[in-house]
Length: 400
Image 1 (cartoon, rainbow, N blue to C red):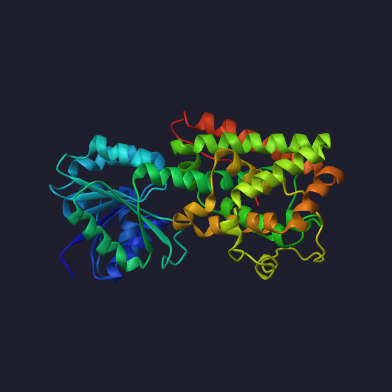
Image 2: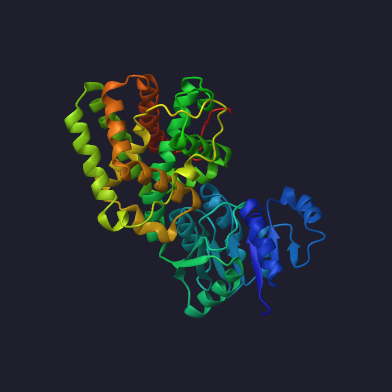
Protein backbone atom coordinates (compact mmCIF):
# COMPACT_ATOMS: atom_id res chain seq x y z
CA UNK A 1 0.00 0.00 0.00
CA UNK A 2 1.28 3.46 -0.89
CA UNK A 3 2.36 5.73 1.96
CA UNK A 4 -0.54 8.11 1.45
CA UNK A 5 -2.79 9.68 4.09
CA UNK A 6 -6.39 10.55 3.33
CA UNK A 7 -7.88 13.45 5.27
CA UNK A 8 -11.59 13.69 6.04
CA UNK A 9 -13.00 16.94 7.39
CA UNK A 10 -16.52 16.25 8.62
CA UNK A 11 -17.32 12.98 10.34
CA UNK A 12 -21.02 12.71 9.74
CA UNK A 13 -22.54 9.48 8.48
CA UNK A 14 -20.83 9.61 5.07
CA UNK A 15 -17.52 10.77 6.55
CA UNK A 16 -17.55 7.84 8.96
CA UNK A 17 -18.36 5.39 6.17
CA UNK A 18 -15.51 6.71 4.02
CA UNK A 19 -13.04 6.69 6.94
CA UNK A 20 -13.78 3.09 7.85
CA UNK A 21 -13.73 1.83 4.26
CA UNK A 22 -10.42 3.56 3.51
CA UNK A 23 -8.73 2.35 6.71
CA UNK A 24 -9.96 -1.21 6.17
CA UNK A 25 -8.36 -1.08 2.71
CA UNK A 26 -5.02 -0.13 4.26
CA UNK A 27 -4.97 3.65 3.74
CA UNK A 28 -3.98 5.94 6.61
CA UNK A 29 -6.86 8.23 7.56
CA UNK A 30 -6.68 11.57 9.38
CA UNK A 31 -10.13 12.78 10.37
CA UNK A 32 -11.87 15.51 12.34
CA UNK A 33 -15.21 17.12 12.93
CA UNK A 34 -16.05 20.25 14.90
CA UNK A 35 -13.54 20.86 17.74
CA UNK A 36 -16.23 20.21 20.36
CA UNK A 37 -16.63 16.65 19.00
CA UNK A 38 -12.94 15.78 19.25
CA UNK A 39 -13.05 13.75 22.47
CA UNK A 40 -16.24 11.94 21.51
CA UNK A 41 -14.76 10.92 18.16
CA UNK A 42 -11.50 9.86 19.78
CA UNK A 43 -13.39 7.52 22.08
CA UNK A 44 -15.53 6.14 19.23
CA UNK A 45 -12.50 5.27 17.07
CA UNK A 46 -9.95 4.41 19.76
CA UNK A 47 -10.02 0.71 18.87
CA UNK A 48 -10.06 1.16 15.10
CA UNK A 49 -6.57 1.04 13.63
CA UNK A 50 -5.66 3.30 10.78
CA UNK A 51 -7.98 6.17 11.73
CA UNK A 52 -6.27 9.09 13.46
CA UNK A 53 -8.74 11.56 14.99
CA UNK A 54 -7.32 15.09 15.09
CA UNK A 55 -8.64 18.19 16.91
CA UNK A 56 -9.37 20.30 13.83
CA UNK A 57 -9.19 20.69 10.06
CA UNK A 58 -5.93 22.64 10.16
CA UNK A 59 -4.07 19.56 11.37
CA UNK A 60 -5.90 17.28 8.93
CA UNK A 61 -5.01 19.63 6.06
CA UNK A 62 -1.32 19.76 7.04
CA UNK A 63 -0.93 15.98 7.40
CA UNK A 64 -2.88 14.54 4.44
CA UNK A 65 -2.27 13.96 0.73
CA UNK A 66 -5.95 14.00 -0.33
CA UNK A 67 -8.32 15.99 1.87
CA UNK A 68 -12.05 15.33 1.46
CA UNK A 69 -14.51 17.87 2.85
CA UNK A 70 -17.55 15.82 3.92
CA UNK A 71 -19.78 18.64 5.17
CA UNK A 72 -23.15 20.10 4.23
CA UNK A 73 -23.21 22.11 0.99
CA UNK A 74 -24.62 25.12 2.81
CA UNK A 75 -21.55 25.47 5.07
CA UNK A 76 -18.84 24.38 2.63
CA UNK A 77 -17.76 27.98 1.98
CA UNK A 78 -17.30 28.70 5.68
CA UNK A 79 -15.40 25.48 6.41
CA UNK A 80 -13.06 25.77 3.41
CA UNK A 81 -12.41 29.42 4.27
CA UNK A 82 -11.22 28.31 7.70
CA UNK A 83 -9.16 25.24 6.86
CA UNK A 84 -8.32 25.59 3.17
CA UNK A 85 -5.32 27.94 3.60
CA UNK A 86 -3.68 25.31 5.86
CA UNK A 87 -3.57 22.73 3.06
CA UNK A 88 -0.04 21.45 2.63
CA UNK A 89 1.86 22.21 -0.57
CA UNK A 90 1.07 19.86 -3.44
CA UNK A 91 -1.91 18.17 -1.74
CA UNK A 92 -5.18 17.27 -3.44
CA UNK A 93 -8.50 18.58 -2.11
CA UNK A 94 -12.01 17.38 -2.87
CA UNK A 95 -15.51 17.39 -1.48
CA UNK A 96 -18.33 14.92 -0.97
CA UNK A 97 -21.29 17.33 -1.19
CA UNK A 98 -24.35 16.59 -3.29
CA UNK A 99 -24.11 19.99 -5.00
CA UNK A 100 -20.80 20.91 -6.63
CA UNK A 101 -21.33 24.56 -7.59
CA UNK A 102 -20.80 26.05 -4.09
CA UNK A 103 -18.16 23.44 -3.24
CA UNK A 104 -15.93 24.12 -6.26
CA UNK A 105 -16.43 27.87 -5.91
CA UNK A 106 -15.17 27.66 -2.32
CA UNK A 107 -12.13 25.63 -3.39
CA UNK A 108 -11.27 28.15 -6.12
CA UNK A 109 -11.65 31.02 -3.67
CA UNK A 110 -9.77 29.77 -0.63
CA UNK A 111 -7.29 27.05 -1.62
CA UNK A 112 -3.67 27.93 -2.41
CA UNK A 113 -2.81 27.84 -6.11
CA UNK A 114 -0.38 24.94 -5.60
CA UNK A 115 -3.20 22.66 -4.42
CA UNK A 116 -4.99 20.37 -6.87
CA UNK A 117 -8.75 19.72 -6.84
CA UNK A 118 -10.37 16.31 -7.37
CA UNK A 119 -13.91 15.98 -5.99
CA UNK A 120 -16.26 13.03 -5.69
CA UNK A 121 -19.84 12.15 -4.81
CA UNK A 122 -21.24 8.76 -3.85
CA UNK A 123 -24.82 8.72 -5.13
CA UNK A 124 -26.29 6.83 -2.20
CA UNK A 125 -26.76 7.17 1.53
CA UNK A 126 -24.38 5.94 4.23
CA UNK A 127 -26.51 2.89 5.04
CA UNK A 128 -26.36 1.61 1.44
CA UNK A 129 -23.64 -0.82 0.36
CA UNK A 130 -21.50 1.22 -2.09
CA UNK A 131 -20.70 -1.86 -4.19
CA UNK A 132 -21.89 -1.22 -7.74
CA UNK A 133 -23.43 2.16 -6.87
CA UNK A 134 -22.52 5.22 -8.99
CA UNK A 135 -19.56 7.27 -7.73
CA UNK A 136 -18.87 10.54 -9.52
CA UNK A 137 -15.25 11.68 -9.82
CA UNK A 138 -14.57 15.28 -10.86
CA UNK A 139 -11.17 16.33 -12.22
CA UNK A 140 -11.52 20.05 -11.65
CA UNK A 141 -7.95 21.32 -11.30
CA UNK A 142 -5.56 18.39 -11.23
CA UNK A 143 -3.11 16.29 -13.18
CA UNK A 144 -4.07 12.85 -14.41
CA UNK A 145 -1.58 11.41 -11.93
CA UNK A 146 -3.51 12.97 -9.05
CA UNK A 147 -6.83 11.71 -10.42
CA UNK A 148 -5.37 8.21 -10.71
CA UNK A 149 -4.32 8.34 -7.04
CA UNK A 150 -7.82 9.38 -5.95
CA UNK A 151 -9.33 6.60 -8.06
CA UNK A 152 -7.03 4.03 -6.42
CA UNK A 153 -8.14 5.22 -3.00
CA UNK A 154 -11.82 5.18 -3.94
CA UNK A 155 -11.59 1.76 -5.59
CA UNK A 156 -12.00 0.09 -2.18
CA UNK A 157 -15.66 1.20 -2.25
CA UNK A 158 -16.17 -1.09 -5.28
CA UNK A 159 -18.49 1.52 -6.78
CA UNK A 160 -19.13 2.22 -10.45
CA UNK A 161 -17.05 5.31 -11.20
CA UNK A 162 -18.41 8.03 -13.47
CA UNK A 163 -16.18 10.90 -14.60
CA UNK A 164 -17.97 14.25 -14.99
CA UNK A 165 -17.44 17.98 -14.65
CA UNK A 166 -18.95 19.74 -11.66
CA UNK A 167 -21.47 21.51 -13.89
CA UNK A 168 -22.55 18.25 -15.54
CA UNK A 169 -22.90 16.60 -12.14
CA UNK A 170 -25.25 19.32 -10.91
CA UNK A 171 -27.29 19.24 -14.12
CA UNK A 172 -27.79 15.49 -13.92
CA UNK A 173 -28.73 15.51 -10.23
CA UNK A 174 -31.19 18.34 -10.89
CA UNK A 175 -32.69 16.56 -13.91
CA UNK A 176 -33.17 13.28 -12.09
CA UNK A 177 -33.79 14.19 -8.46
CA UNK A 178 -35.12 17.73 -8.03
CA UNK A 179 -38.55 16.96 -9.48
CA UNK A 180 -38.97 13.61 -7.77
CA UNK A 181 -37.90 15.03 -4.41
CA UNK A 182 -40.36 17.89 -4.86
CA UNK A 183 -43.14 15.40 -5.62
CA UNK A 184 -42.63 13.28 -2.53
CA UNK A 185 -41.98 16.22 -0.21
CA UNK A 186 -45.23 17.76 -1.47
CA UNK A 187 -47.08 14.49 -0.83
CA UNK A 188 -45.95 14.56 2.79
CA UNK A 189 -46.96 18.19 3.15
CA UNK A 190 -50.41 17.44 1.73
CA UNK A 191 -50.97 14.47 4.04
CA UNK A 192 -49.90 16.59 6.98
CA UNK A 193 -52.30 19.38 5.97
CA UNK A 194 -55.13 16.84 5.84
CA UNK A 195 -53.96 15.31 9.15
CA UNK A 196 -53.73 11.91 7.48
CA UNK A 197 -51.59 8.85 7.95
CA UNK A 198 -52.07 7.44 4.43
CA UNK A 199 -51.43 3.85 5.48
CA UNK A 200 -54.53 4.08 7.70
CA UNK A 201 -56.83 5.11 4.84
CA UNK A 202 -58.36 2.58 2.47
CA UNK A 203 -57.88 4.97 -0.47
CA UNK A 204 -54.11 4.46 -0.22
CA UNK A 205 -53.84 0.70 -0.65
CA UNK A 206 -51.98 -1.10 -3.43
CA UNK A 207 -48.68 -1.42 -5.21
CA UNK A 208 -48.06 2.13 -6.41
CA UNK A 209 -49.40 3.55 -3.14
CA UNK A 210 -46.90 1.38 -1.23
CA UNK A 211 -44.04 3.01 -3.11
CA UNK A 212 -45.38 6.55 -2.70
CA UNK A 213 -45.84 6.16 1.05
CA UNK A 214 -42.55 4.37 1.73
CA UNK A 215 -40.44 6.77 -0.35
CA UNK A 216 -42.10 9.81 1.23
CA UNK A 217 -41.35 8.46 4.71
CA UNK A 218 -37.78 7.66 3.64
CA UNK A 219 -37.22 11.22 2.45
CA UNK A 220 -38.66 12.79 5.59
CA UNK A 221 -36.54 10.48 7.74
CA UNK A 222 -33.33 11.66 6.09
CA UNK A 223 -31.31 14.74 7.01
CA UNK A 224 -32.62 18.06 5.73
CA UNK A 225 -29.29 19.24 4.31
CA UNK A 226 -29.36 16.53 1.62
CA UNK A 227 -32.44 18.14 0.05
CA UNK A 228 -31.23 21.67 0.72
CA UNK A 229 -28.12 20.91 -1.31
CA UNK A 230 -30.14 19.33 -4.07
CA UNK A 231 -33.08 21.69 -4.42
CA UNK A 232 -31.90 25.02 -3.00
CA UNK A 233 -28.17 25.34 -3.52
CA UNK A 234 -28.03 23.59 -6.89
CA UNK A 235 -28.41 26.33 -9.51
CA UNK A 236 -29.59 23.80 -12.08
CA UNK A 237 -32.63 22.79 -9.97
CA UNK A 238 -34.57 26.05 -10.21
CA UNK A 239 -36.11 25.31 -13.59
CA UNK A 240 -37.19 21.80 -12.56
CA UNK A 241 -38.93 22.96 -9.37
CA UNK A 242 -40.72 25.72 -11.25
CA UNK A 243 -41.90 23.40 -14.03
CA UNK A 244 -43.08 20.70 -11.63
CA UNK A 245 -45.29 23.20 -9.80
CA UNK A 246 -46.65 24.36 -13.15
CA UNK A 247 -47.29 20.80 -14.36
CA UNK A 248 -49.18 19.92 -11.18
CA UNK A 249 -51.32 23.05 -11.43
CA UNK A 250 -52.17 22.68 -15.13
CA UNK A 251 -53.02 18.98 -14.85
CA UNK A 252 -55.18 19.61 -11.79
CA UNK A 253 -57.09 22.35 -13.64
CA UNK A 254 -57.79 19.95 -16.51
CA UNK A 255 -59.12 17.41 -14.01
CA UNK A 256 -61.32 19.98 -12.28
CA UNK A 257 -62.69 21.21 -15.59
CA UNK A 258 -63.49 17.72 -16.84
CA UNK A 259 -61.38 18.21 -19.97
CA UNK A 260 -60.96 14.52 -20.74
CA UNK A 261 -59.69 14.83 -24.30
CA UNK A 262 -57.11 17.51 -23.51
CA UNK A 263 -55.95 15.69 -20.37
CA UNK A 264 -55.62 12.38 -22.24
CA UNK A 265 -53.66 13.95 -25.06
CA UNK A 266 -51.29 15.73 -22.70
CA UNK A 267 -50.63 12.68 -20.50
CA UNK A 268 -50.06 10.30 -23.38
CA UNK A 269 -47.90 12.77 -25.30
CA UNK A 270 -45.71 13.18 -22.21
CA UNK A 271 -45.53 9.43 -21.72
CA UNK A 272 -44.55 8.80 -25.35
CA UNK A 273 -41.77 11.39 -25.10
CA UNK A 274 -40.30 10.07 -21.85
CA UNK A 275 -40.89 6.35 -22.29
CA UNK A 276 -39.64 6.02 -25.85
CA UNK A 277 -39.65 2.85 -27.93
CA UNK A 278 -36.06 2.15 -26.89
CA UNK A 279 -37.05 2.29 -23.23
CA UNK A 280 -40.20 0.21 -23.63
CA UNK A 281 -38.26 -2.58 -25.30
CA UNK A 282 -36.64 -3.23 -21.93
CA UNK A 283 -38.15 -5.06 -18.96
CA UNK A 284 -39.92 -2.96 -16.36
CA UNK A 285 -37.69 -1.66 -13.58
CA UNK A 286 -40.39 -2.64 -11.04
CA UNK A 287 -42.92 -5.45 -11.22
CA UNK A 288 -46.12 -6.24 -9.35
CA UNK A 289 -44.36 -8.56 -6.92
CA UNK A 290 -42.06 -5.72 -5.82
CA UNK A 291 -44.75 -3.06 -5.68
CA UNK A 292 -46.98 -5.19 -3.47
CA UNK A 293 -44.21 -6.27 -1.12
CA UNK A 294 -43.68 -3.25 1.12
CA UNK A 295 -47.13 -2.35 2.35
CA UNK A 296 -47.44 -0.49 5.67
CA UNK A 297 -51.19 -0.92 5.75
CA UNK A 298 -53.16 -3.59 7.58
CA UNK A 299 -56.19 -2.71 5.50
CA UNK A 300 -57.61 -5.07 2.86
CA UNK A 301 -55.43 -5.36 -0.24
CA UNK A 302 -58.18 -4.26 -2.63
CA UNK A 303 -56.87 -1.28 -4.58
CA UNK A 304 -58.80 1.99 -4.88
CA UNK A 305 -58.42 3.77 -8.25
CA UNK A 306 -56.32 6.94 -7.97
CA UNK A 307 -55.55 9.67 -10.47
CA UNK A 308 -51.88 9.72 -9.33
CA UNK A 309 -51.50 13.44 -9.98
CA UNK A 310 -48.04 13.46 -8.40
CA UNK A 311 -46.68 10.85 -10.81
CA UNK A 312 -48.42 12.28 -13.86
CA UNK A 313 -46.81 15.65 -13.10
CA UNK A 314 -43.32 14.11 -12.81
CA UNK A 315 -43.56 12.74 -16.35
CA UNK A 316 -45.23 15.92 -17.63
CA UNK A 317 -42.37 17.96 -16.17
CA UNK A 318 -39.73 15.72 -17.73
CA UNK A 319 -41.50 16.06 -21.08
CA UNK A 320 -41.77 19.84 -20.87
CA UNK A 321 -38.06 20.16 -20.05
CA UNK A 322 -36.94 17.62 -22.63
CA UNK A 323 -35.50 15.30 -19.98
CA UNK A 324 -35.15 11.59 -20.76
CA UNK A 325 -34.39 10.05 -17.35
CA UNK A 326 -32.93 6.86 -18.85
CA UNK A 327 -30.07 8.96 -20.21
CA UNK A 328 -28.94 9.55 -16.61
CA UNK A 329 -29.14 5.98 -15.30
CA UNK A 330 -25.36 5.90 -15.06
CA UNK A 331 -25.65 8.44 -12.22
CA UNK A 332 -28.86 7.18 -10.67
CA UNK A 333 -29.40 6.74 -6.94
CA UNK A 334 -31.28 3.73 -5.54
CA UNK A 335 -34.26 5.99 -4.76
CA UNK A 336 -34.28 7.48 -8.26
CA UNK A 337 -34.43 4.01 -9.80
CA UNK A 338 -37.51 3.31 -7.68
CA UNK A 339 -39.12 6.64 -8.66
CA UNK A 340 -38.46 6.00 -12.33
CA UNK A 341 -39.66 2.45 -11.96
CA UNK A 342 -43.02 3.38 -10.48
CA UNK A 343 -43.74 6.08 -13.10
CA UNK A 344 -42.65 3.67 -15.82
CA UNK A 345 -44.99 1.04 -14.37
CA UNK A 346 -47.91 3.45 -14.57
CA UNK A 347 -47.25 4.75 -18.07
CA UNK A 348 -46.40 1.41 -19.66
CA UNK A 349 -49.61 -0.24 -18.46
CA UNK A 350 -52.09 1.29 -20.87
CA UNK A 351 -55.14 -0.11 -19.08
CA UNK A 352 -53.94 1.33 -15.77
CA UNK A 353 -53.16 4.68 -17.39
CA UNK A 354 -56.65 4.82 -18.91
CA UNK A 355 -58.09 4.04 -15.47
CA UNK A 356 -56.05 6.92 -14.02
CA UNK A 357 -57.43 9.34 -16.61
CA UNK A 358 -60.99 8.14 -16.04
CA UNK A 359 -60.56 8.51 -12.27
CA UNK A 360 -59.17 12.02 -12.71
CA UNK A 361 -62.26 13.12 -14.64
CA UNK A 362 -65.11 11.19 -13.00
CA UNK A 363 -64.06 10.31 -9.45
CA UNK A 364 -63.89 13.14 -6.90
CA UNK A 365 -62.57 11.01 -4.02
CA UNK A 366 -59.08 12.53 -4.18
CA UNK A 367 -60.06 16.11 -5.05
CA UNK A 368 -59.40 17.53 -1.58
CA UNK A 369 -56.11 15.62 -1.33
CA UNK A 370 -55.11 16.88 -4.78
CA UNK A 371 -55.93 20.45 -3.79
CA UNK A 372 -53.58 20.26 -0.81
CA UNK A 373 -50.95 18.58 -2.99
CA UNK A 374 -51.19 21.38 -5.58
CA UNK A 375 -50.80 23.98 -2.83
CA UNK A 376 -47.77 22.10 -1.50
CA UNK A 377 -46.10 21.86 -4.92
CA UNK A 378 -46.54 25.58 -5.52
CA UNK A 379 -45.26 26.40 -2.03
CA UNK A 380 -42.19 24.24 -2.72
CA UNK A 381 -41.45 26.46 -5.70
CA UNK A 382 -41.79 29.63 -3.63
CA UNK A 383 -39.78 28.09 -0.80
CA UNK A 384 -36.95 27.27 -3.18
CA UNK A 385 -36.85 30.85 -4.47
CA UNK A 386 -37.04 32.34 -0.96
CA UNK A 387 -34.60 29.99 0.74
CA UNK A 388 -31.97 30.40 -1.97
CA UNK A 389 -31.51 33.93 -0.62
CA UNK A 390 -31.22 32.87 3.02
CA UNK A 391 -28.01 32.27 4.92
CA UNK A 392 -29.23 29.01 6.44
CA UNK A 393 -31.96 27.10 4.57
CA UNK A 394 -34.11 24.65 6.44
CA UNK A 395 -37.15 22.49 5.84
CA UNK A 396 -40.18 22.14 8.06
CA UNK A 397 -41.51 18.63 7.55
CA UNK A 398 -44.45 16.92 9.14
CA UNK A 399 -44.14 14.97 12.35
CA UNK A 400 -44.74 11.27 11.79
